[in-house]
Image 1 (cartoon, rainbow, N blue to C red):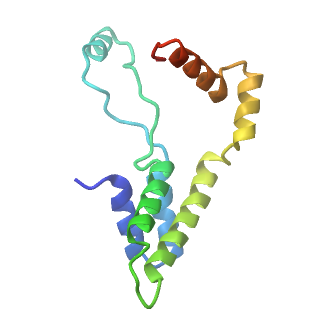
Image 2 (cartoon, rainbow, N blue to C red; image 1 turned 30 degrees about the vertical axis):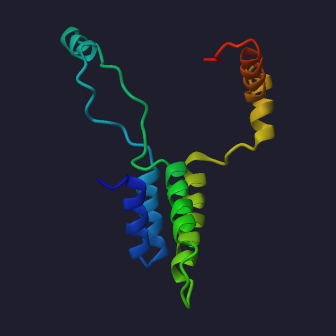
Length: 146
């Protein structure tokens, strides 16, 4: 079966109206609550005792990073196809730009690497640079880092 992000890209490629594309993107990117929970024994026991089953975090049908990666992959794989008009490439670039706007509207602006590092410092969590250093230290001792 075709990945959801590819299905969305195909649908968007066939949609001419910008507003219709935005509606499709909003629907695909908006996190949705699951009506059903996993059929695990823990959830079944909780249902018998009247407790609420463990709920999963609301997820979108198509996560925006997956969609953007699909757009990049299509442009990478088909970017060398020569044609008199570059309509396909321009349309994918337009769709990717629209997707970024919709995703920013839903999730807010992303953080720059500096902002992520500052947040890690303020929260006293481990930064990627510290993790890399610990991994390299472990490798130099002949150990494998988790």
